[in-house]
Amino acid sequence: MANVLPGEKTAKKEQNLSSAVYEAIKDKIINGEFLPGSILMERSIAEEFGVSRTPVREALKRLSQEGWVDWEERRRAVVSEITISKIMELFTLREMIEPFAIKKIISEGKPQLLAGQLSAVYQEMAKAKGSPIDFMKHDMEFHTTIVHFMGLSILNTLWQKISEDMTRLVMHAVYPRRDTDVILAEHKALIDALWNADHARALECIDGHFSIIVDLFKQKGGTVIQR
Picture 1: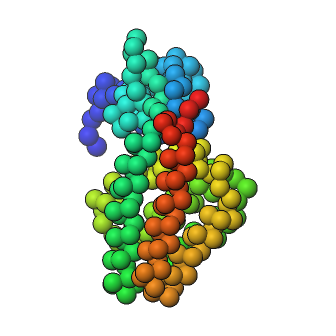
Picture 2 (picture 1 turned 180 degrees about the horizontal axis):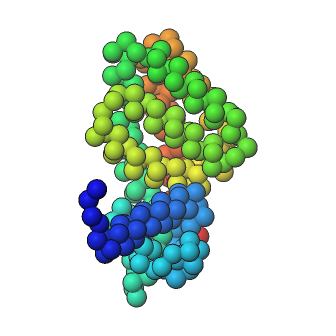
Picture 3 (picture 1 turned 60 degrees about the horizontal axis):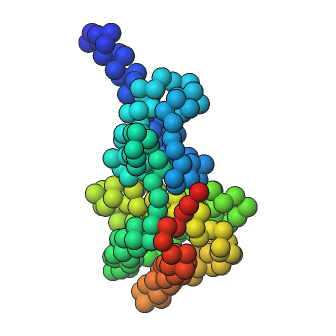
C-alpha cells in the first residue's frame, strides 16, 4: 500500500469537501434556492454546510469558471443573471442538437427504440405534475434521453451544461406560465411520431416545442430571472 503524506490527506479531504460544496451550491442555484443576483457569503455557506471557508472558496471559484457565479467588487460572489441573449444561445445549440438527433435516430431505423425509452420518462413526468422541481427534472431527462441515445460522449458532455442551464431557467421562467398538461401533450405527440417513424411530424413537434418556449422568454425581455 502506497504511503500518503499527512499533507496529501488534508489536501484530498479539502478537495472532496470542495466538490461536495460545489454540487450543493449548484443544485441550489438550479432549483432556485439561490436566485440570480443573490450574494453568496463564504462564512454563511461554510456555517450551513459545517465546513471551513477554504472548500467554500474553491467551490465558488469553480462555479465562477463555469458561469454560475460572478465576482463583483470586494470579491463578492453573486449568482449570475440569465439574460435573453444567453437563452437564445442555449436554444440555438438545442435547435442544432435535438433535431439532428431525431433525424439520425430515424435514419438508423431506431425511432421505436427511442420512443420506448421516452415513454418511460414521460410516465415519470406525469407522476410529478404536482412537484415543479421533479417535473422539470424529468422534462430535461426526456430531452437528455434523445441526445444520449446517439451515444456521442463528447456531445453528452456539452449537453450536461446545456441541460443544467435549461433546468434552471425553465423552472422559473417557463414552468409557472405553462400548463403541465399542455407540456405533456407536446411530449406525447413526439413519442407518437417516433412510434410511427414519422420524420416530418417528429421534427415539427420538437420545433414547435422550442418555438413556444422561446416566445415566452422573448415576452419577458431583458433579464429572464431576477430576485
